Image (cartoon, rainbow, N blue to C red; front, side):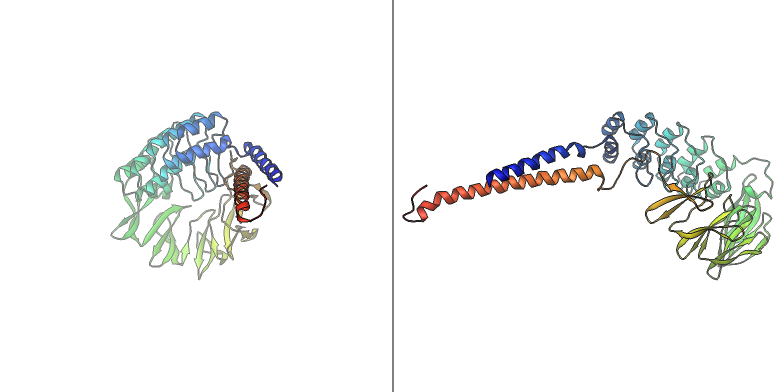
Length: 410
């Protein structure tokens, strides 16, 4: 029995030693480990060992984004020095600069701006780093972005500035508006509130273009603005004339000449004259994109229709989307993401740049680690078992002659 136990113990020890190299931490895992610990030395060693500076997890979060979010300036410097791409976006379309804006990381933003990061990039919600900073009222961060001289002014930026409650930022942004902008040019009409009512200012002149008389007002898009009177929504033109009477339960912005409107719990589409072009039949609806498609929801599933109301992609996906500039939309089905073209063909699953790290505990390397530890533990148990078994055997041999009269000692 002793010889057999020894062989088992020897086999377990050999197997655990063979698995140990497989469980060793790779440079990529070391990079994430250094970031999680906030240890710049480990991070630097991992990069020198060949870890990719654009490494990302399954959600598209790159190590640069994580370093920005954690406020690790030294880690950001190391990653940028190794060529980390500042313009990569995660699954939600957020860039490293957007993460900096959301967490008010001014000093880190300066490092990113030195690498020519795209300040006009938008995430899946249509937010930019500047609009994020403005809505959060981070005046110093917003001023830094504005003074970079790369901002492309848009109505959403003007609207966010008007609600930032920072007069200095508002004046700084409005100073970028071309002075020749006319009073009736809806591009630079910005909603403002006075005596609990909403109207519109001309951002170039600062004059009231449409007097405050609405309970709420949104930006002008495609020449029309959504306004609220009581509990109902309607649309006005740049002169303040009501083009669609406020009888809608809800509405979204115009694009491609059509706007999603909600009546009696269902969504449909109307044109700029208020004519119903697509009857209310959906549980949810988004504005049309530049390709002439709109994302709709029916029975908790998402699909696409064209401007004629024809179903282009049947509602079968779990998340909403819109077509990007390359004509591809991103949908999720369970935990799997797909890239689909406008004809409904699956282009392929999403692969994010630098995605090499498997964060699951059941990755191959971590599985080898678990097996090696389990075998080592089992070997230890076998050693203890043999030790106590032999000890008990010796104890029995020691007391047996005295306890049994007439028995010869062995």
